Amino acid sequence: RTLIELAQEHQLTEDSFKQSGKDEPPLTFAVDSYVTYIPPAGVRQKLQFERAGPYKVTRINGDDYTITDLVNHKVITTHVTNLKAFKHVPEVHDPRKVAAQNAGMFEVERIVAHRSAKRRTEMTF
Image: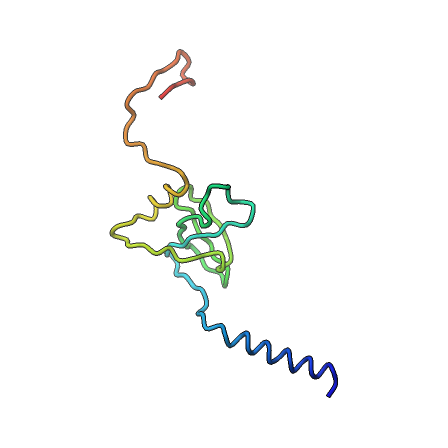
């Protein structure tokens, strides 16, 4: 046998060995399900979580998923490998509140007092 035939045989055995170890099912998410998202390198701030979200899956095109931010309604298209299922109990956790909290936004319960300057553009709360 030639060296090329030996190399091809070795490559086939290596490939079949590596492929046989993959028993994981392919990643799929249903439309209207909630997922977390890994932003590309360099986009995430230093103190932010590794995964952003939750986001809502709005469209599927093969392996590309279109997700919508629940806080600012920004639409992102990404590969399925950048997503992970957001597991929650619907009766206990509201995904919109979790997304707002992860984004650093909080709901103002009430305004106790405020002062108005002479100009309407300058107000102090």
